[in-house]
Length: 103
Image (cartoon, rainbow, N blue to C red; front, side, top):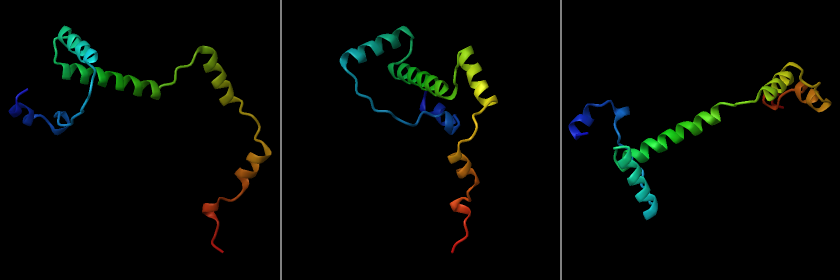
C-alpha cells in the first residue's frame, strides 16, 4: 500500500508498530516458502499467522470447555455448596479492617 493511501486510513488501521525478529536460516526459508505458497509477503505471513495464534490463545483462556460429566459436577457444586467451616464463619462475621474506626 502506498504511503498516500496509508495516510487515508483511520489511525487504528495503520500499521505503524514494529516487531524486530531474529530467525535461523531454516526458519527464514520455511517462512518465505510458506508465504510464497500463500501468495503474500513474509512479513504479512508472519503477522497474520502470529495474530491468528494470539487470538486463539486469548479465546482458549477466556472460554472453559468441560465434558458433560465435569459440567454436571460443576453445576452440582454450585447448587449444593458445602457448609461453611468455623474459620469461614468467623471471617464472614468479623468486621473488616477497612471499616474499623480509628482509635
